[in-house]
Length: 248
View (cartoon, rainbow, N blue to C red):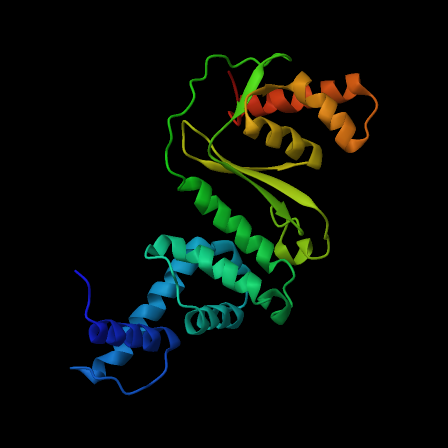
């Protein structure tokens, strides 16, 4: 049932006051209850974000964390109706408004995105999973990708060291986040730009490594085809063992 315009306006005003934690005059049947609603909403935001970003929360000072929560609540009207999806909007808000520079925490964005993608991969909608007909990889096998994954490009290696230490090691890092199909566990592995190229080709459709190698040689100016193919075959075999790649 659609709300009347006046009712919708009151709800929007009430929601904004609860988010911004300010004191204004609203037409409420129990105005003394407003402070309790504000505290409740604050706790929902804070607890949801702490649950989503436990590593970031532990890393930042209490003041810095509460500052980010307050800024998000006051300046961003969340668009998603699902509370569990709200943390993504938090990451986007922090990234777009350059709070990493404000707090002098260069690795902040990368750490938030890494933690968010763990949630995103874990909660991906189940699809009909391809049957695993073969588990021992051979060079000419056609491969497809585990459907539950994200490839993340990071500037700081927050996936393998403390965020403060990672801030001193800027570079071009790639992390494959994937969900193990039979257990549902989410795991991370670091991959190279060459590995990214291989996986992006496989994501586009079933392919064998010998079909992809010519593109690798051209893209990265490699000239030792035999050595490169042997190296990448070991990589593909390892990902088959991990059930990231599936033999068709």
